[in-house]
Amino acid sequence: MTTIAMVPMLAGRGAPARSRTVGPRGVVPHTAGVRDTAGVRAGDADVPLRLTRRGRVVLLALCALVLALASVLVSGRTASADAPASAPTVERHVVASGETLWEIASSIARPGQDVRDVILEVVRLNELPDSGLAAGQTIVLPTQG
Picture: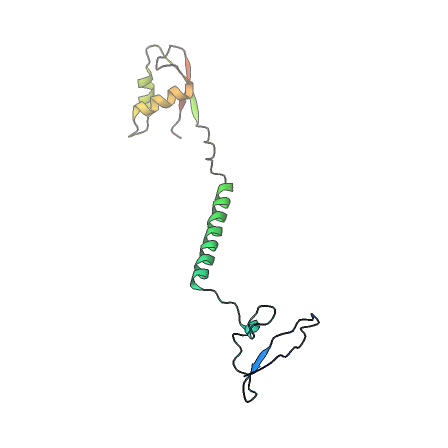
């Protein structure tokens, strides 16, 4: 085979594009393995980019990671505190002589409600140190409404 160097210039860069080997009858054989001076195979400039299976898996994993991070950042910015409880409606009660907290709580308890829970609520509302009451003491009681 005879080698003929064809030296066209690349857009004014001053470098030869590639050399070709010419067969015995002047036919140019397949040039897929021939490289030009830029390191690109001849004819590869028109081939679109293709992802391998591994590349698709990596790309999918990166997208999932970005979505997970975005959801964490967005959910972290929302307020999750409970709204303040509305103030309970109460009524004032003056303790009579001999009246106990159990009697008062059982008189205001709703049907099916445990009287002990009502006592705890009355103690909490009045900030009582214990369940003892004195005659003439004014306390607040939760209303049923």
